Image 1 (cartoon, protein in one colour):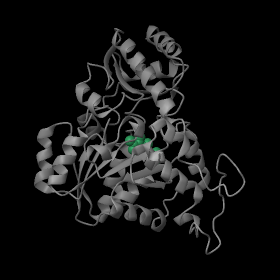
Image 2 (image 1 turned 30 degrees about the vertical axis):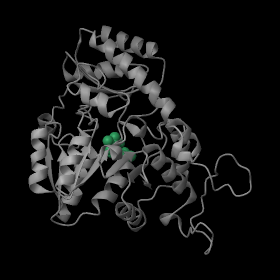
Image 3 (image 1 turned 90 degrees about the vertical axis):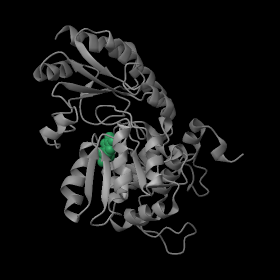
Image 4 (image 1 turned 180 degrees about the horizontal axis):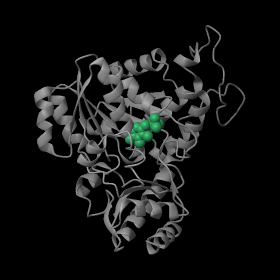
Length: 382
Ligand SMILES: *Cc1c(COP(=O)(O)O)cnc(C)c1O
């Protein structure tokens, strides 16, 4: 039986092993060498173009995602840079209007200068897919669930339309992780991760990855990794591979906790909106159940109070740290308008539904009753 026949939690533990020589080490060391002696059997030469630690990590993430090829980068933004760097002046991208703030900034302030044009559309509305048929862009760019509104986009439906129009689809799969959602199996060309979030899972290093079954795209990613200097550091790759071994276990707990909190929050009178993909009240609940194994660890709420009180509520929590980012073992709370989406112009922000009182919870793996008690105490003080 080959390793790929194993279940995902077995693969998570066993894939990132190797390069231990004859030491008998159960886990690989960190290869801090910048350069390698010519003629070594694995063909390493210089760490920018390959290092045992990130080759192991690439193998592990590709296996988790069920992909043939994986390429790792120094951050999620480096992975995005690698993909967008393959475009040329005049190329068009059709992007979901609710993309991650850094992705928007990169398109708007960097690649716009080089003539890459982006059309932003609400891709949760199938009527807007006609634009893909009409313009046949070089790339369709989407996230699902989206940040921070947790809209669910129909990856299979869009991939079918894009394929008919001859264009490639990239799914930023960071919010779901490979354990909950597999975009390539749904027809996407590329799946991208900020491994900083769930894959590493411990909020102690940055990283990015691009997965594909397309050999040409893989060659482009390997080229971008070395030609643009986007490679991860060996130690960060080692940390990320260590985190990835427990991805399935952590995701099960994140999802169970988030569902319990979302159900509880729905019953609280001061909470006007609760958005969680696996709550029946979510507008794309059926689609979420079709395309995801579980609802992931993010919840979006709105409180019936002004922005300053929403901030005071967040600061009053003891188990939720007010911080950007998500996907670590610890719970975090974020105020998108002043934090993750501060780089998005206010009028664009409001147009995509990010109100000033919106809060995003990244639910960790603590005991759910402790988290509920913390939220309850802060709500009582409102
Ligand atoms: C965090 C994040 C990124 C950027 O990744 P970094 O590792 O911070 O560079 C991109 N997309 C999504 C959806 C993210 O959550």
